[in-house]
Length: 279
Image (cartoon, rainbow, N blue to C red; front, side, top):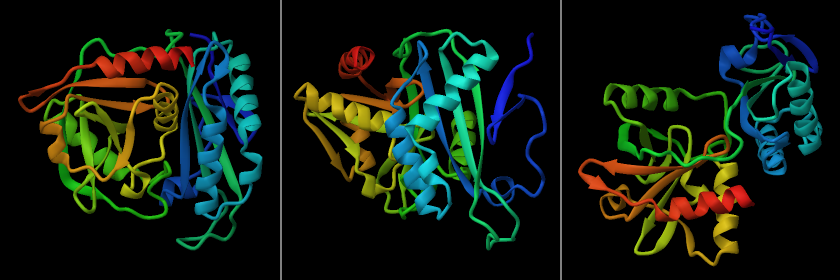
């Protein structure tokens, strides 16, 4: 296997090199945030949306340097990493941004550092899963609704616990509720529910991550005159819905087949993934 590389604060390092110190604030306090991005045929998908969310999150965390983390930066750094690794231009990236410097809970500096990693992919388009997902609702913990809820912060213990619940119950995915008991998101994606020919998704005020693919799907629905409503959604709707699908930036759209004894269709998901690939 040829040596693979990552980018650490603008410098290439071997992908397995120990680049982070034990004093790193991201490791110690979860003091950071991240973006998962996808490149298809050498084009970073939705770079502007990723940059908007990243800079918004850095501002919310009071981190310096957010003006530099624009869409040009994302396109440039991902392209550099592709070239260095001689990848084919179909890649899944993770950009982790952390607050540098010392301090205990109170930071001594607000300067940001970053690590950019990639995994090459074989597919050259978003692909709908052939076998629908089996889901359940994770109710052991809920997600707090606050000004950080819409960003992908490094504090991911809720999703880790939901992931353990998923594994223990042999599920493909688990739905997460917010502190008020309403539908929020899944472990790694936003949720859409088709009910009586209307498409619903939890509003950002419900505490879900402001997903890049969520935004793209909302734009696609608007362009195709499909009614989409951002709402407060009672999880009971999962028992009545015609369709449920989840979306994220790296996988696009995945349709859900079953929840308990309930079975769903996937017509809307099929229609939207075709539109997404033609976007």
